[in-house]
Image (cartoon, rainbow, N blue to C red; front, side):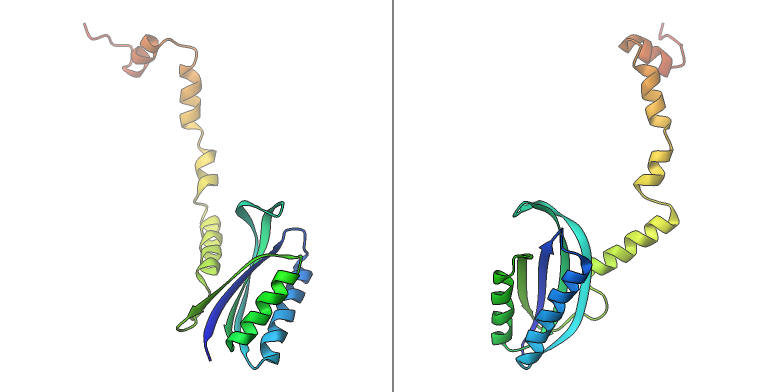
Amino acid sequence: MPLYEHVFLTRQDASAQQVEELTAQFKGIVEQMGGKVAKTEQWGLKSLAYRLRKNRKAHFTMLDIEAPPAALNEIERQERLSEDVLRYLTIRVREHEEGPSAMMRKVDRDRERDERGFGPRERDRDRGFREHRREREGRSPRENDEALSGGQSEE
C-alpha cells in the first residue's frame, strides 16, 4: 500500500479536545478502509504566515498513513465538509521518517535553547548598546566623534 504524510490545520478557537476528536475520526476512516495510521503528531497552535478564513493561528496535526488512495480521498472529502479544518496537504512518500518529524525536533531544540539560557531573551538583558545610544542622542555629530575618540583632537 502507498505511504502518505498528511497535515491538516484546524481553527484557532477549536479546543485541543476537538482537534483530537477530528484526528480520531480521520484515523477511523483510514482503518475502516483497510489502512493504518503509523504515527500521529500534534504540532500545536502556531501562527500562520497570512490569514486563512479570518484566522491568524491554527492547530497543526500530522498523520503518517499507509492506506489505499480511496481512503485518502475520503479523508480529504470529510475535511472539505468540516468547518473546523482550514487547510490540508497530503504527500505521497517512499518511506515514513523514523523518530520525530522536523517540526517536533525544532520544538525540542527550542526548548533546550531556552533551558541553556541562550537566545534573544538573554541578549535583551544586556542593555549596553542601548545605553550608549541614549548617551549620544543629546550631542551633535562632532561631539559624538570627540566622545568616541576619548576627547583627543587630531591637531
